[in-house]
Image 1: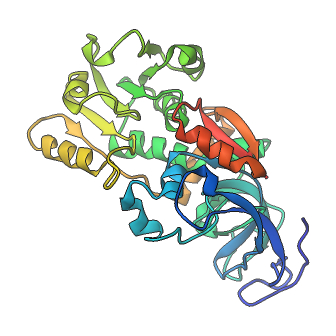
Image 2: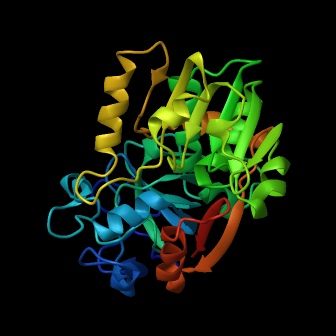
Length: 345
């Protein structure tokens, strides 16, 4: 759809600001629950705040975190997203598209720019209003679907390996869930940092993980890495299928373990495992470092550089049209995605 070109409070004159009263198609949910609570409806076009950018969404990607917000489980997520119902009725975070309007305080973007990043008010819609600090320019010639696949998963992988583990050339890094959203980026980023990378995945994904650049691939259906002789400087555990004590056996005496599945009990999710990891850290030279990634524009710029040089390439499993968003989230919730799932708008 094309929006009428008018100005309104908070938008720069001539910037293509969105007028009140116009509508767009969006995926909406009015209560927590399974993917069946999602529906496509006509909703009001968002207005642009002083520091915001209006993006015509070309594609959006979904990940397990979107499933947690959709279902409201573990219940802990409701403290951040709404106790009784979602605070924002449009789900999704990661997106890529074209700027159609900018707020009066925005100087980094202008209408017509291709951008990617994350929205705090929903991405599964024809348009999204996004704080400018959550966006970066899409690298030249990068398809919009690839750009939309990057933000949350790649930022998580980058922060885990660079900021938490401080991965350096020559170190040995093991990544479980190496064919998944975070894992597929983590394999490539660890290689870009000069590490010797081992990926853990199922039989059907061995060739995929090898194609991402992994030096070694372990098929977990035939080999238990915790009982193998290998010892690693860093383990990024995106699956957490084994007890902490078993995983620690695969670490070097001063190695770093980063638990990162996000799963756990229905009430507090991974907090119990996180508390146990932090407690154990006080009694060993090994570093057990659960963490929560934080979206930073500078990290988007770093990832844009890695995309431009070809050091990371998004792995996309499936694409769905907007009206099949429920199917996309149902597939993600099943837990066997190969790379990222993208919704085209």
